[in-house]
Every structure is written in structure tokens, then in C-alpha cells.
Length: 181
Image (cartoon, rainbow, N blue to C red; front, side, top):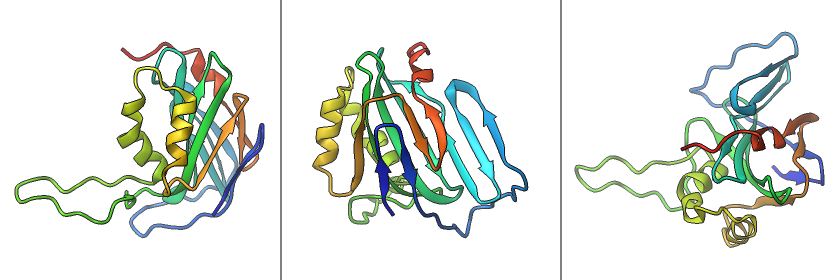
């Protein structure tokens, strides 16, 4: 599966199904807008949604966009509101949380099992993103992603408007939010 990003368009191809995930049948196309700039597009043959935008610094936001319900593709966008540019990282995901770039490890006796992520985008955000605080420099995030063999799908954006499977997402919406304290 490949993610193809042009200046204002992002198409995500392919999806699968997970055995432990229940999918509700969608009979008509709907658009649902939620809190913190989230939006979901559902149709009988398509599910594309953005999660809530989160300002990770006073000028940089993070927002996920997923295609598929139980499995599919997940993209994390880091967008610098002041500079009007950003970076995206993505790949396949599973709601079952089966991704880890490291070989399988077992926890030491008496410790919790090691956590895994839904995919490379979530793993990056959960494990590597904190090292970019407090500034969250877009160039530094992109440079780090370039060194990671498990982040095979990535790119730059120079506009807040992105399109996934023909559905529009406006990252500038999140720029209007106040940073979390």
C-alpha cells in the first residue's frame, strides 16, 4: 500500500479486515463533524476520518487521519501553523495494536507486557515525538522520519488543505485552538 501526497491531495489505497473488530453496516453516505476539528466521512464502501487536532506546541498541531475501520491506513500530520507547512508520516494500521519496529520482546518477570502501537504513525507519535518538544521543528521531524526504515510512507505539505480518498481535511482548523496546558 502506498500513500501518495501532492500539494493538496492525499490518496490512500487499500484496506483489510480484522477478526476482532466489529464494523457497523453503513447504508448511506454521512459526514460527521466532532470536537477539536475532527470529521468522519462514512459510506457503504468508504470510511475516512480525522481524529481531534491537538496543538503540541503553541504553533504546531498533530492530527491523525485514518482510512478503514479495523485495519487500513493511518497518517499523522504535523503542521506548523505559523510557517504554513508540515510533514506527514503513515502506513498500515490495525486497531488491534500489532505494530512494533523492534523484534518481539518479552517483559521481565513481574512487569507489564511491552506495548505495541496500531501502526508506524502512532508508534512515532507515542515513542519518538516527545524528543521534539518543546518546539516540534518540522524539519527535525522530517529528518528523523527519513532515518527510520519502518516509516516508508512520508512527505511534506505546504498547505493546510489535504484530501484523503477524495475527502477534504483542513488542518488550519486546529491552528485556531488553544494549546493544551
